[in-house]
Length: 106
Length: 499
Image (cartoon, rainbow over all chains, first blue to last red; front, side, top):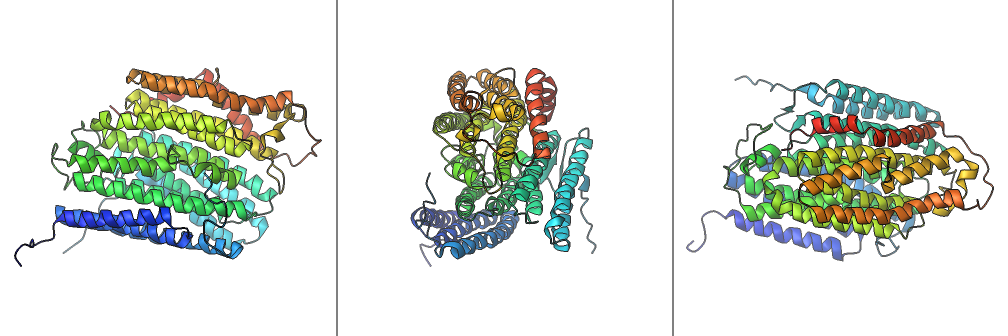
């Protein structure tokens, strides 16, 4: 196909990753449900994973992808603890909206 | 085809291995003895494990500095210094928790393994020779703390603290990780020493550095963005302004033992990681980042000390005070010199003594079901319990930086390192804000000595261990203030990798 590069350049992956990271960060800042905020954080972590794999491919080495495995393991542990805390909150006040209490008073 | 196992230097991570075993042992023991009477052995098992681990760390003091596990962790005096400091903080936290949780009649056995695992996270942060290990250390520490912060019989406030710390903490971790990815992308390596070499830093302990880009061919823009994101991620753990908004609420809502652990241990771990990252990987970029960090340090000191003036809850006041002290510690990193790094280690020890002492008094004065953390609860303490009041006054004077306490000597070393590095204005800002801080520290002393007690308080359990901690801390605060030479010598020897 004329006009298209043979291989997708690293910059394209980095751009997508930055956009995904930004969407995740906006989600954390703008949404009020603790669950949605938590999902947005996972989106941010996975955006970084995309960058790491793209860099690994650019350098022709595996260490970028190895780091991703570490990140996935850590994210799984974080989800386990995070959901437990959110369920606990839901049990005691029947809502996971952070506006329902003066939670984030500075 | 044969596979040879790589030579593993188990001895280099022996203090951490002992802590892993301690955590697993307490976890199993908790299952076996599920009743409440089985809790005391768990506390002593944790203290014993931490003592063995600390003993090994002290025994490794004269070992040669080296990298271990494929250049992932460094076993050097810097690691050992912080390992011993963290273990002391952990033991003190166990003693606090033991007394406090028993008093609250809420004493789940999971507390002790979680504390042991979060200590491993702190040690990993200090030992990290690779950004990936820094990340894993931060996460191990944080994930355990998300649970520990919510550990209480009362539901509402601890729950709020836990969810707040969880959401903001994982948010900050994502920034830290993005920073690591950008540093990797611009230098081709995540090893701190190899990043340093790619940026033209003089040698030191450097591993193989396969895949790192050649010296001088680093993508600078991406690297600077990565450094900025690392500051965000680690600055959150250290509670630097403007990443501090979680700290006062979390400190207030968490059990006092965990508040003490976070304000001393976690802060020291975050600064150990900051020091490693910035002075091993990015020393050649010091002119770029030191101005940024100097501004952050100034804002942190001023904000922490100003907002602390208006607090009525002593845990919240100590929370803002710990933000201000994070600013002082950051001044030591801004100096980017060997003297600055040594002063950071000294200040970390002194701050641990004075802050753990202050929290010990807070724990002792609490009662079942009632923490008694309003500053007005300290009215007339000198008439009821003169020894406790004298100790608390010592800690308050030390935190304010009055000679001859360790607080004064620590600030002197930190600010003189900043002056030597050419940051006279930063040292002056620090001095001015610490003079202002005397007001809120001395207000506690005023309450204890000048105001009559509001009520006659019934005597309560004596808290032998916590009182012992307070007494030892009070002794250390004075002794280190009068004879700082020993610790300064050790701190200087521990930071010889800084040039």
